[in-house]
Length: 358
Image (tube, rainbow, N blue to C red; front, side, top):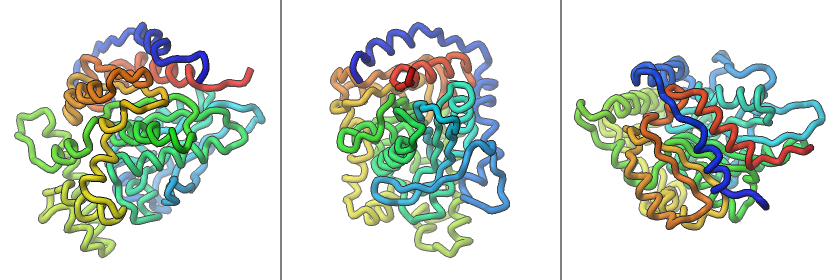
């Protein structure tokens, strides 16, 4: 991208003040509470009589990942004959395109920032899970899902450049997409990752062990266990006993390492170690050639801040990767702490790399 650099946009955006003024519990409630009403949509997948939260200007689309796995998304295009940049939004673990943080970003980018937008369900989540049995890899194949979405959106006549934004698992996905983009070149705008991680193996191990009740991670762990149990029950309803057993030997006992070993690795004909290696950003951030901003919080209880230190060391000063660690923000909850800052940084970063015809 001639004439543009991560250093320039990084310096510019660092001037935007991050000023959380609300009590922590109110900030977290504002960030997380709206999504509790959509849990069943995320876990149970599509239902013909279910709610359709996007406005009529967005249409449901089905498109292939790079490995031809079918994916579902919602597409917002401006049909006025004028070309605009596009952006793809990607959810986190046990999430979907219907998550509040995805919907709000998608609608703001479409309605206020004048972008064309695609919000997708990654493989194994949301409505995409109803179209194939492809399991989640924690980042590697999800990166190909992002590239498939960018290819689909970028192929529209109304779209100039395409950027990507991801949260948590989605952050790993967009980082992987930026890495694989060296071969496929479907991302032509900036890549923004919120609350990511360095090692997929570390995260799988973390979610496979019950933490003490006093650990700040415990409430998040409990929610993930509950969501996994809901999914187990849905699999039982569908008669998929083999998949049920790999999520744990008994109810409320998820073992994601076993899932990687017995489901993910055999499905993709890779070793367990290869899946972890391919999905861990620490193994490729030094080679990133595409602009990526990764934003994290010092108090993230899900992906410990040590993951960012590991990424910094692994990046070896790569100028294409900028890692910010803010004093607070929890896990993907920055909007609840300082909404004005959150939207300003996201829009500023996307606009900087976007191509808008004059």
